[in-house]
Length: 76
Image 1 (tube, rainbow, N blue to C red):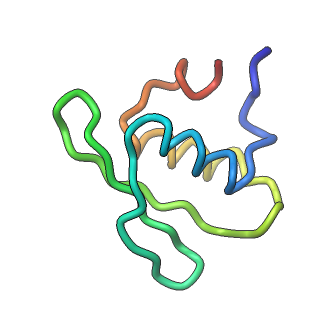
Image 2: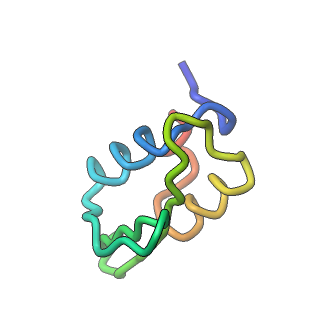
């Protein structure tokens, strides 16, 4: 079952990033910065923490782009 872009929470994104080799780099306020190596390139992305609220689809698209992980991996 595909997830789509409209039902991801902070916890879902954090779990996905950690399972793909990302680690928490630092926190600044409500922004959590994750860093990881994808295809030999260092990528850093930040995820804004809003409790159990869903992340806006456009924000999730930005996180996907910053992470360097293919969209197919995110949405499967």
